[in-house]
Length: 525
Image (cartoon, rainbow, N blue to C red; front, side, top):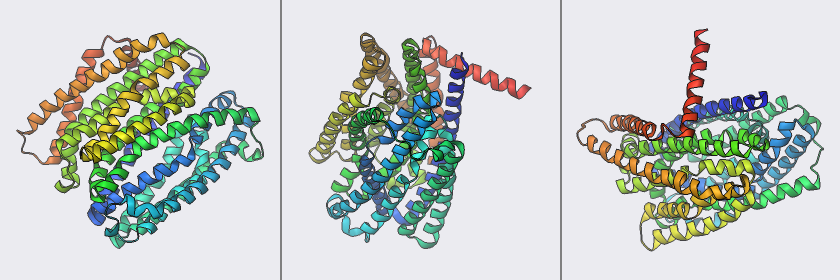
């Protein structure tokens, strides 16, 4: 293994480990924060907060995928240590993000007159426009300074950005809890978030200036026309991807608010927090190697890239299977213990929530490789179709069939199955690996076949564990914990038995064992 290759995967390991640890700690902070929020402000304000989050996600469409495109464009100049090219790219994204921040501010203000139409019980909470402007300011402020995180991500130092974010998230959580406890004021709660975001981004800006001092020396460098055309081409592709991502992931609360009210959004927000927290940890794990994969692709070894793609898929499959099983058997007991019985959804709704998580999370390996290969244009076109289908299905199932939360999520599940699950691997095989003839075998046997198999095993394990729960007269939190232990143990054993002879699983096992032996030797000496 070459020194560059060894360094690349060492950085990937550090990134993955630190990001996962910080994400776990951040999740703990979010739960502590939301616990106080629920107890003091109630489900209506919780629903309003969730709706604001979705509205800001829609407004983030103005970002157009510029950040992702720039990170992709930075891979090669960082690999070549081309400081002038790096500086020109960073100058470009600085100007772009300043314009984006202004655009989001204008678009956000323009949304305010629509609130009576998208919030069913609009009159129940006073000062909603003021609350939204405070929430909006947090997003706008971030765009004026956060662009410097891009170079850390592309240089496989995202862990430094995340450590900065965590430090100020901790400060924000402590201050917000104090504000809630003593003042019971949602407005002050939002102001604290904006101030902490501003300080965090100023801090990361200073860190990047120290680590890359040449950026301050080259502030007048500009990209040439060829580079700008390439970035524009990537952005055009990313526009479609942004539309798809925003509509699929951020329509739920908007539809529920408009047709069912903020209280329902508040109840669903607790489940969304838990599932999103787990999804974010897994996504950090699988996407933290994107820069390493980008560097691997630069070596132009297609066979190695294909093998890593399959290995990445199996790692993601195993983690997704185990976590989906844990969510299925622990969500309701945990929510009942944490927030109270008034915040608990039906078992059938929980099944749909977990199924949506399972199918969506399996896409992450393909999403990582689409990004690493820079396949923004073909994926963007797909995402527009995805957005239209998802919105029509979710709206129909909610308003015509009156399926509530289940209808909105079933629309997303069907969209992922019909559009995303096959198209994303297809463009990787066609335009990335240039091995279209291998696609059918991968999709039907590796992707879809394993998805059905693992989904079936999750269902069987959940039925058995839920049956055992009927014999336990324990507190609900204890049941949630024991269910997680049982589900993870059972699924890991089954996974090992099924895949123990599979070549990618053998490779994964050898890497893990090598890492453990290395750490054991280091401790011994």
